[in-house]
Every structure is written in C-alpha cells, then in structure tokens.
Image 1: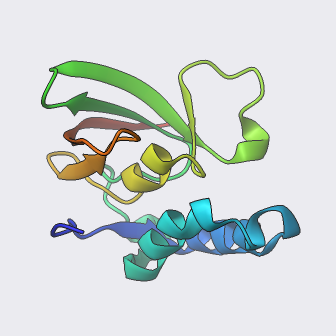
Image 2 (image 1 turned 60 degrees about the vertical axis):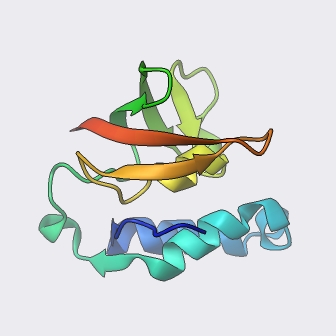
Length: 128
C-alpha cells in the first residue's frame, strides 16, 4: 500500500473495536483485515487527549473525493447501530475503517472495488 497517513484512535474505541472483532461473526472474516491493520498501526491515546479534528466512532465526517470533487457527510457507526440511520457508514465497511483516526486535512489513497484509486480528503469532523 502507498504511504499511509498516521492515525490516532482513542483507547475506548480500540477496546470496543477489538472486542467486536473477537466476536464469532467477525473473527474469521477476511474482509475485516483492513480494519485490523488500521487498528494495529494506530497510535492509541486517551480519549481526552484525542484532538477534536480526529475521526472517531460516532463522529460525523465531511470528506471529499478529490477526483470528482464530491463531498459526503457521513457518521461512523458500529454495525449494531446502523439500523434506521441516514448517512451512516459502518466501521466494518472499507471506507469506514479507512476514515477512522484520520484528522482534518489528511488525505487517504482509497482503492475502489473496480481496482481504481481515488483520494479522500477529510474536510471537517464533528462529534455528537
């Protein structure tokens, strides 16, 4: 993979995500290897030390696909929280795990299902 921007994840999110990945329905799912890799490379910090402009669980993120200029506003949720939510992204979706831990201004190289690449830039992060 190309150079990955550094990411920071709170102890609380790491603990909850690792517990989720240990559950039977997720444990042997190879599609979650991307999320596992993100968690392994994350700098883990106390929640109160996490800067406000860093994407965490339940954050609403504004991001732009640089190739198209399209902007999206999505909230990052655990799978069990997704029901009935509009503009939600699950942490188990590849884009969800890619967004976690990024901060405003960072760009990530995003590989699309068709094998093409796009670049996603974090514009704004809001916390509930």
